Structure formats: C-alpha cells, structure tokens
Length: 239
Image (cartoon, rainbow, N blue to C red):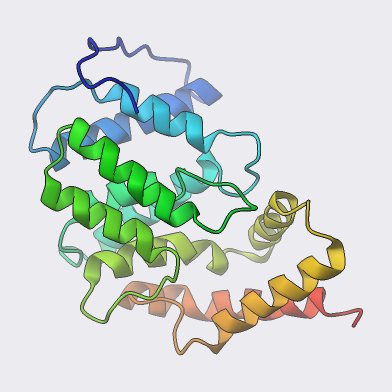
C-alpha cells in the first residue's frame, strides 16, 4: 500500500460518464468511508490507498471480480443500510470490507480471501483506522469465503448479502455474470468447469437460506434460487 507519510495527492475531476469519472466517484466514496472510519482525521492522504485498491480491482485476469463488482457490492451495502436503518453494528467497517474483500484475486488460487484480509490488516492501520475496526474489517473479509455469518452477526449479514445479491439479478444480468465467471476460469476445461460449477451451485441451493438480512430474504431469495436452478439446468443439459 502507499507510503502513509506521502504528501497529499491532488484529486482531479473528469467528465461525467467517462471511465475516469467512475473512478473519481469511487475515490470519493472511499474518502467518505475512510474519514468516517477514522473519525474525521485528514491524514494520511486517503487517495493513494484508493488508487492502490482500484489498481488491484482493475487487474487483467479479472472478468467478474472487477471494479463493476466493487461498485455493485458498495451499492447493495448502501441499499441495505437504507432499507434496514441501524441494522449493521458498524456500516463503515462493512464498507471497508467491501473494498478489500476481493482486493487480492487470482482465479487459480484458493487463498484470495485470506490474502485480502491480510492486506486490510496491513493497510488500514497505516491509513489511520483503529486496530479494533481493522480487526473487524479483516474478519468480515475472511467471512466471504463461506458467506455463513452467525445469526447475530449483522455486519457479516450485510456484507455477505451484498456480495451475493448478483444471484438475484434479472435473467440477462445473471447470464452476463455467469459468462464472466466462466471467462475468469478459462484455464479450466469445459467439462470440468461444468461439473465443478454445477456442484457449487447445488451447494448454494441446499442452504436453508442464501440471504441473512430480512430485506435480502424478502427481495432476493426467490429470484436467486430461480437463477441458480436455471444455470444448473444449462450446465447439465448435455449430461
């Protein structure tokens, strides 16, 4: 991560609707979250940390776990906070965890969540976040390995629901998601991918509930299960 003693980085604006403008918007979201998480302290400069994370989220091996996914998760966290006001114990920690939860991502590795959590543990104290809140962020990042928060874990429920909300997309968006996942795993032979992906989706369907927040259960559970079932049918159609 950046040198915490580096001088402040000027923040330039770009034309609305351009890719750079989208990154500007994300930098501003990071600024608001980080300042809230460190109780308003202005130093060190937040922007180099945002730029480092956005560079990670823009790596060429990503097809689904991209900046678009980061935006979607942050948007769903905001949606859940608005609909379930006061539900999460620490919404700022949840938002920081959203930024870090796939910050390290290599499709052929199994330790991405752990490495992402360790990145948070290194970067956030440098950025002025307390050790207690850093520990909570790292815990939440590790939780995205299983998406299985405890019943009383409201922070975990919000993050996991926001991360899985893509499963409840309209069918066209879900198809784009499924194709992007396949592209990330392009190194896996087709038959092996179909078998493995179908097994993962069946495990999800076997869960008593995909979503843990009241809003997620009400709004996302049924469409997500329909999408998962339809993808399993497509994956296994020729077997």
